[in-house]
Image (cartoon, rainbow, N blue to C red; front, side, top):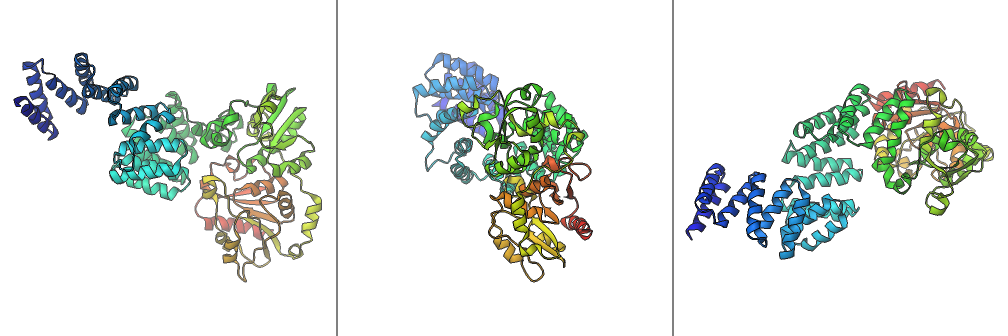
Length: 592
């Protein structure tokens, strides 16, 4: 009883912050009662809680040598190793503990966490689901299981668990950050930022939150502020070299080559592998017309999250374009992410066809007849015809993504085509020209204002109403915006603005008809989307409004507001305001 009272008194002092006094008392008790294992165990637990981990480990190992079947001793030892990030030893003693008590909650929870860190997500899920039920209020286990669900793309289940973790502990910062990251990946940036802000209010010095806020600000093109957030995080974690990558990425997006290269070199020095950073540096070299330096780094696009999502199964089987992989080889070319980039890179197909005699090119099915007509060769097959069939794939000696052809065919700015290369269907073009809309003497202006693909699509899109300053007499606007825009057009239409639509033409799927409409225009005004690439590749005069937020699109990023890919495109970046940019567009239209 006297011993219990002494232990109780020491615990109270320790819990009340009188740590030095508590340690002094327990050491005195051990000195005078060296055989009392209860005193030794209390001392080991106090060392664990006070992060005196080496001492906790030493004493715990001694205790286990006296009683290897003590669940309490094993628990304290494995948790000490867990704090020391020694997952191998921690797991070893957890499993010993669970052999003695297979229902031990903390043991299962922490084993599940260790399996998660080892990326054994199925094992981790099975372990944690055994101890999580509707009444679970442990935010740590709810959060870890939520992270596992994220890895397995069970997003709604993950969101539910993160919300439950927050309900259990309204200051559980990890779950706020994880919810924000979910919405960030779902492209709901405003909702993501709302959770990051809540995490920031709980602890404005937590590096993970600062990094998340920096990522949000950089994507919103507020790169100077994002860099401040990253540098604040770096103060908290000076050895987190991923932050160097993030800073370099923000400087790259801000077109600050010197500082981007400085932080890129720091990240490389510490062997940080960041494909997005390499890709951004490639974009910077492209922006400066240093193409030969760009293309090796450009290959890193194949390791980015966006690329891996759709192309992971084939990436390891691909190579880059060089003489040894093209000349005299049986070659398969794979399409890139979207139809816009596919058209962009098809500018190299004539050169490729003249280089390789044994060639197949996988293509979006909407483009096959267009490419056959334009390039005069029957080498185009539907996307996936070879790449998704192991037996067919074995026929080829070289498998190359279309973008990788740049390394061989576009080494300098003088290697780019000076003429258009996509050819319209002449019969359809004549047919469409007979539409009464083209009989007027008004200036025929095609208009497209949205991009509907990915988070960047949202960032570079505009609203139809934004183009009101361009509405003038003697200008006939023609709708070339694919997607569900009928309601938006109806809301805008009035006696002063009548935008004409070809209601019977599917602008998304019937690309031949779309090309024929474009061919009959005087000028095409657009944001960055696939239609802009089609018009540009046909030689249609194109005025491209390019929000700064879409600067990650390397093909519109050049120092003189032109692009080497298309000679007939004039780029209007939104630097100060959209209003100022539209005044510049207006000036060009007035001269037509």
